[in-house]
Length: 200
Image (cartoon, rainbow, N blue to C red; front, side):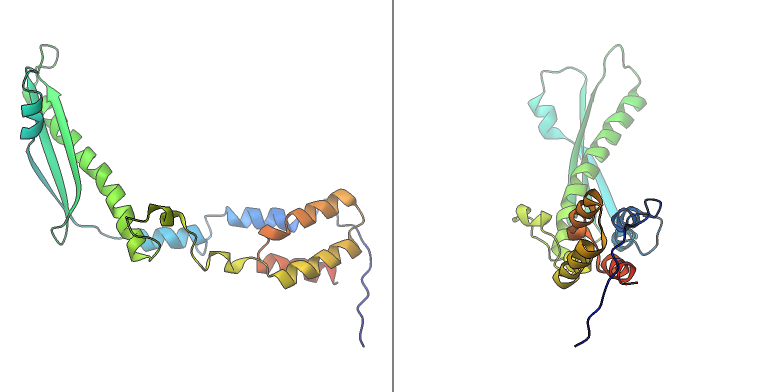
């Protein structure tokens, strides 16, 4: 039976800790292969919308006692003609704000921004449906992690082996605790590097 003997040693304090390297890599969004870049690339593209503006007669009727009120509603539809957002905008003509064109533009723009805001929420739920994460009725599922999200983490076998290597090779108790504390967040790649480092 072959046995492997490891020399007990303390890692150089100058050498970056593998867990720190892993954290640094996790935040490196300049890397084209970063998971966040991949997610953004999936969402990028051309979205086609139609914005339809009309007088908001319901608001005008509700606030008929307010002099100078103007109200507009905006309906945003996707390329298939399905509504994805509805917004409302209003403004009041007063002696302070007498510019008719300016007031109309403010009202129109406000309704568009309101519609765009509600469209963002609708589109998020539609994207979740597309990715099979959740339906709009199951909002709790919207925060469910994907099945493959944890697949890049170190395996239980790697972590168990690393614990043995750490106890054999790291004499400094604080350093040993730091290693052990980072095992659960270590990736498979980092675990392999650490095993190779200890086994030299």
